[in-house]
Image (cartoon, rainbow over all chains, first blue to last red; front, side):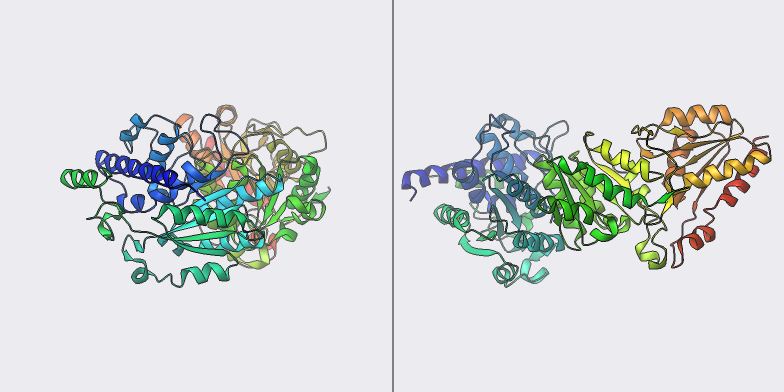
Amino acid sequence: MIAMTDITILEEKARTIRRHVVNMIFEAGSGHPGGSLSCVDIITVLYFHQMRFNSSEPDDSDRDRFILSKGHAAPTLYATLAECGYFSVNELLSLRKMGSVLQGHPDVVIPGVEASTGSLGQGLSISCGIALAAKIDMKDSRIYTLLGDGECDEGQVWEAAILASHYKLDNLTAIVDRNGLQIDGPTEKVLGLEPIAGKWREFGWHVIEIDGNKIPEIIDAFDEAQLRKGKPTVIIAHTFKGKGVSFMEWICAFHGKALSKDEMKIALQELKGD
Amino acid sequence: MESKSTRDAYGDALIELGDHPGVIVLDADLSVSTQTSKFAGKYPSRFINVGCAEQNLMGVAAGLAIAGKIPFASTYAIFSMRAWEQIRNTIAHDKLSVKIAVSHAGLTNGPDGASHQSLEDLALMRVIPNMSVINPCDAIETRNAVISEITRKGPTYIRLNRAKTPVIFDDNYHFKFGEAVKLTDGNDLAIFATGTMVHKALEASEILKKDKINARVINIHTIKPLDEKTIIKTAKETGAVISIEEHSILGGLGGAIAEVLGEQYPVPMKIIGVRDVFGESGEYEELLEKFGLTTKNIVASAREIVRRKR
């Protein structure tokens, strides 16, 4: 059991990261606020609770690793890495600017980024490769990868899903950020994914469904995944696109649109915390 | 002359590398054809069959390289092109040491027809930043190139063939990545050949001697990075060049040489290759004949270009 105080700390950390994200995308003038905010709680729990790593020893071969397959949520990853000490939080506002290391989508030039991503559908395959290497070397490190729900339209995701199950990659945990929206509209209207949990189950995965914006549920899901042997686990994390900013939640337009100055002010006010 | 396919040499080279614990071999359900089955039989724990899923093949190989392994990813040349974007965005962009060793390139998969032949791969791989491209000319060069790749960082595309072709080099041959290999002396023209066309260029140079035309045959095994220095020097000394490749005339060896000479030392040039069409079913040698990838065509082209020079 994790103490309530720890959960409060994680919730505060998530709010801090959301504020970074809102500021970063406003300064950049472009980016993907909706899908960045939906997955903040998941990435916060991974980096501040679940994963074993040391930001001052980034090349430690026994570290747990995270691959952001939905690379358009880069601001959330960057804000988290900065909060972990991989680089200064002062650099965050250089996102997407000429000369900055903070590329529009994750790039290995950025300290803490394990693989360049952004072209959808590739992160799960990469994670399978890392997980296979860990199995071959008999390491107990774990690999986490976050996919978008729209990303599950990509055929490569399912190629990797078959492989992970075939090779019994129980050191691999995938999380699907099930915010229900993709660029052209609701996922079920663009290209129906349901029953998404059933699809993963039939592909041989252990499936856990949670509220992906509730930190205690995220923690429990990762614990359960770690205990499940013999098959990979996928966490279908039901989230709200734009989570934390009332006027953005469940609004498709905020997939790939920066906030105006007024919108940013309201957003930051809402993310101030209690 | 002994004959052996380069895919066969690749399979043997992997066995030689078997004691290297970092070597992982991946295949996409074509392990018998690509000859990775030899490694699979001997080192099953370091062989990963991803099924016929080439995009995943490249992604999984990328992940293994990220974790410090040296993955060799194999399938047919044409099917690796299906994962071009994965190769570009994940493997090449991140400079991962993934060795993409693919068989049945060019027309060597004759009877299977156009869908299984690969005449565009050199162009598609060459255009990607950070990517190295090796097209060995025989079994010995293949073996040496594969062995040397183990210590070279970064991604490489190694083009292999189904057909048995003459073994040109002997066991003393030393493969040097990125360095063109002069095979014959001559100052009347240069023949830059790659892969399966190298032995045909050698045959042509013998025939040309009867016409008192001395051709300098140069084996370009590394298409990228191209040995620009040797190419420019050779153009200066011979004044006329032919390129020949079992590939489209667009963007492959001929294209690469034309880019260099066009900018730095233009001389009359003839590019021999498949002229922007698809292949078709037929025996390998019949197809080479149809598309002009023959000793006879090299000889005729050489005579013509020497005339143009005068």
